[in-house]
Length: 398
Image (cartoon, rainbow, N blue to C red; front, side, top):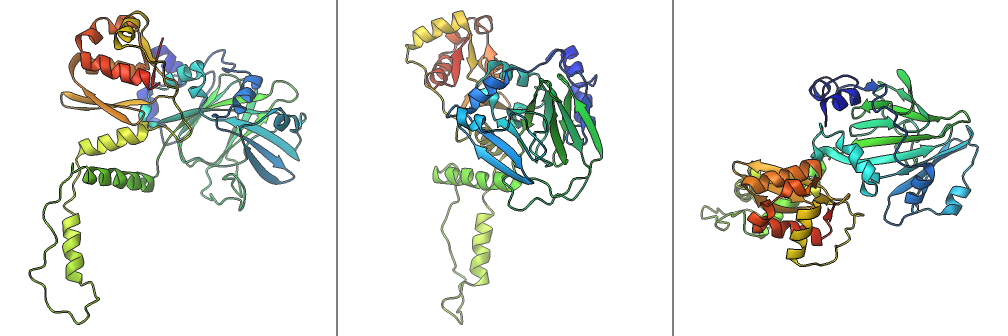
């Protein structure tokens, strides 16, 4: 990102200052973070996305003191039943996840936040709400930038430690909320919130433009989830004989037991010591993280590109350039001279100029024809890898 653009996005702070002073520490209000920002799509276009089969969407309603949530895909009748003039007794909001998977402009917006590693990025969620709409007081377990599109939203922030939830609610709504600060955000304003900070956003239209908010969220897996997934990863390595525990169980020092059915402490201790011989390196952890963090969510489906010859592919590549599909996630890990790349849960390793080229693809999400030049022709393995990713639908021609 350009330096001046980054300074404006963060309210005059450099990315280094922001990370040191605010990231995962305290909220930051940034007025006019993106000049003249009115959003990336209209309310009608957002509703259209919510009607698509493969798009995750929700309508959250507050009706007579109770919260309700319904999940898409929706249709015209679902929207028609919602009150056009919401009240304190019945208001609502529409939430659409992963808009960056369907809108190139949304993916470009996320690139402005590349001072945070791609490995931490989750998605861009867009919400629409008429006056008074929102999802109630809640807290998130992840960092989020809340960028205001059209309309206005009042954000209330609480420093409370009481995070007890309303029992039986379809969302994680707080039972109590004590406002410590509040800010009214207009188009182009942005609020950064660290994890577990209670907040409450309320659409404010006052009969004018309804509210649309763009939420740039960052994933934060639970340690329990990481441990569970990593143990499954290690089991695969054991099954593939990539991790070897030699020998068999031995007990030449076995002594007579009083109970034949008893597992002795000595037996348990021997097995415990053998299991502790399972070791893992940073490289194994990196392989696990790369495949885990780049692995598509269950609802993500890639459309394979029409099969063409590798020569035709290389010719088009040299003329057009190539980009990651909007749904693709690409990460990499450097280990001395070797760089391992992770694309949608799959791995490939390269060195030298080819590795540098793929690093650019991972960082910028595209390669211009001028970037590629003759490099693909010089490395047949690189050409074949890009070709395979293209056929799988992970890449698209620019």
